[in-house]
Image (cartoon, rainbow, N blue to C red; front, side):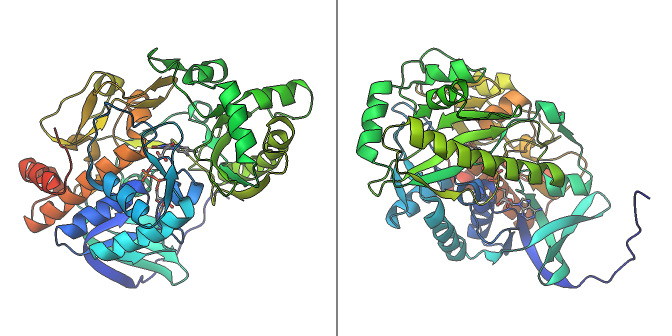
Length: 453
Ligand SMILES: Cc1cc2nc3c(=O)[nH]c(=O)nc-3n(C[C@H](O)[C@H](O)[C@H](O)COP(=O)(O)OP(=O)(O)OC[C@H]3O[C@@H](n4cnc5c(N)ncnc54)[C@H](O)[C@@H]3O)c2cc1C
């Protein structure tokens, strides 16, 4: 037997709202705050106990590690997140850029404050598990939580789940690459008890650059990155494998970057244990990757202790709260962004914001030191087939090369803020999201300090 039939049930309605945002990561936070600021009732639903998505749940703190002199970017809510974190003492110097790394723990609190101040109604510990669709329009979602199975009805819904869960459940067409082609997943970790003086001296001698990435990952730079400093460690892991100290499972790669070195002896965002062949929309794959990942992190800490000066007495501070996942579904939208758009300064009349020419993925690393940037069209967040639904974040409509740019948190915040404003205007003007007045969306975004063109 492959299936059982679930008997029909009466589902209590938990809430009704103008705009419902599902998923509270960088895109969802931006979408909810932007919508609420336009004066519409907004609910933000999140499956875990904190907002922040990959920032707080995985521990990815470097929201703007691309930023250098000459970088041109959208501003908007990314700048506000950074500013608010600074005010709360919730960031430290990011070591490779003109930016600060957010403190992943403190950002949980910063996000609470920003959501509350914007007047968003928050719902944590609330998993969206189904979409309510009638006549090609999305009307609401079904949630599961400790309160049981409930419904939330909304005039407009923004899917910010990273995996386009709601869009897929609603019947929006999507693509997903084969398991073996999907981007690696990462078990993130942070260390404490590091003698940071000794460690930084070692790094000074090692002089790692972005060119080093090429030896390990299949990676091409534009050339201008090659001599720039990158906080990148792979040699200790290679030495440990060659000397038989580290056992490398076939689907695991060791090595990568860190983000900050703090005066308290922490080295954070150790992005160094990667697992391939994992489909992050499959529960058994997720379970396997979490557990293999933790085993490998313990081994990686032992390697750092033995091979990296300053780490001799280091200890694991924490694993990410959950596995870090990069890629699953991409919705089919009214426009599909391409590598050509993000690498050739794409320009669109329906732009909802800009992002610098920062490409990190699919075998390419380009840093935006030149002032070049691309625009993101509204049509890329507007799904086919279902009206009154928008999708923001890493799963918008685009090819895998465009994803290497729009997956970055700064760009997820741009698409989130654009979606939030568009949803609010479509409610206020009583028109579906496919018919929203794009000029009004653009001028409202500009009032919210977003650079649109
Ligand atoms: C290991 C790793 C390192 C990275 N490094 C960087 C970096 O240095 N800089 C950078 O800019 N980007 C980096 N990225 C990419 C970036 O973090 C992500 O692409 C980005 O966070 C995606 O934002 P999002 O809002 O679309 O999704 P997410 O950040 O994944 O947020 C989605 C949110 O939705 C919630 N959710 C999911 N499904 C449901 C559901 N059904 N119901 C309710 N809630 C749900 C999740 O719990 C989460 O809070 C990295 C990614 C990984 C995994």
